[in-house]
Image (cartoon, rainbow, N blue to C red; front, side):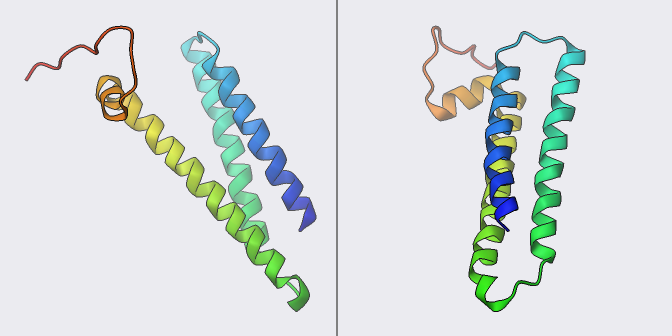
Length: 114
């Protein structure tokens, strides 16, 4: 169990670093596809680890810690899902996303024609 707790901490830091590195780049299409594949691989590792933890049948003294770890994985997976949903929403209509969130821009977003 403690191994998984360490992996969770490492995973979140590595995932954030990966995203920040990609946001800082003006990337070619090939670089974007490679970055997306790396993000996908990290998410798959997270889900595999979550499956591993859920498959464990803990001894009674360890059950509370096990439930906490399963819940932590679930919460992290839900946060990642929310982040991905938000990213897709922004990519689908950046101007509307900026407007909905009340983000300030240097100039107003272009008006959408009917």
